Length: 183
Image 1 (tube, rainbow, N blue to C red):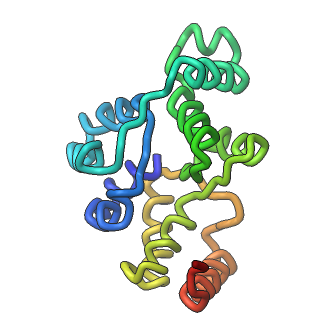
Image 2 (spheres, helix red, strand yellow):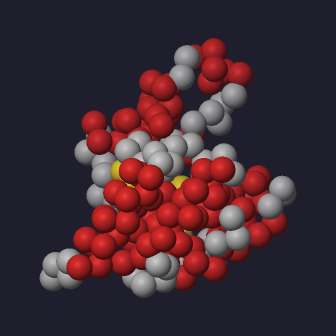
């Protein structure tokens, strides 16, 4: 969802520069991105091996992802659409298994992640990383957030498209740039 939104906002190169070697995604998400590429061909640029790594779940992890998928949806929903929320469930499982943070704005994963011990970041936090890396100015990053939200990306909890939300975002960016990373 976040990757697709950035590509559709013409920020593919920025995404590649910042996350090319850090991104990890389950095969299900790679499949979802390939599906989105039928409508937005540029998405093929943010698929492994050019972008990140595709990670295969082992049988036990796939079963746990299936259990999570069913916890979010009724059996009838899963019967009608076996792929419903599967990518999010697999992402959550991989992040839990490897201790990775999860980058998503899927509300089910955002709510479930912390309960499962997974740190969850949304689009604003990803953009803050890009600001801290000096790839963007903070004001430009907020404008990108406004554009991807206008393009259909769900809201990130705590980041309303208001003057107050913008001011908070800019303060967080400034704090990140002022605080050197710990060794």
